[in-house]
Length: 140
Image (cartoon, rainbow, N blue to C red; front, top):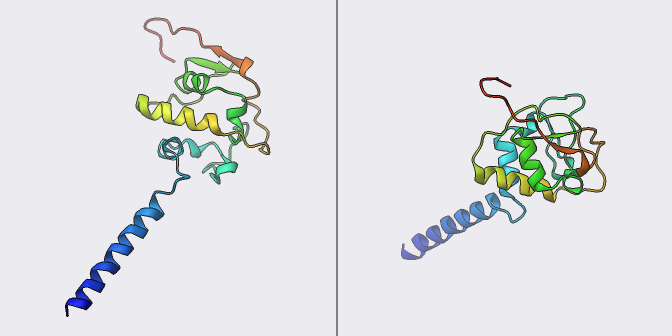
């Protein structure tokens, strides 16, 4: 009886440990989780990380190589609609926490896949420009 109870406990522990390992792989990145949780994948693909956009939209870049051309600080400003890329503001202002924004921008900075779809909206870091300051009382 004691032996079978011990065996059962060992099996339960092994299943629990395996489940934990399977859900927290070293390749997971908090920024990638923020990307998915914030529904950035509604519009954007990240083919290099097997993320497929929910909506097929024209002129929305695959972000597989965005880190090659946009620095994390520039990405943060762009996501907050404080800077433009190619004279355009990001369509949606990021409204997560500062910690999430840092994680997301950091992860985007690591995306430097050499083979990616054309990124028409993000071609070089020189294209990042400060957005004009919003006047008091005016809405975006």
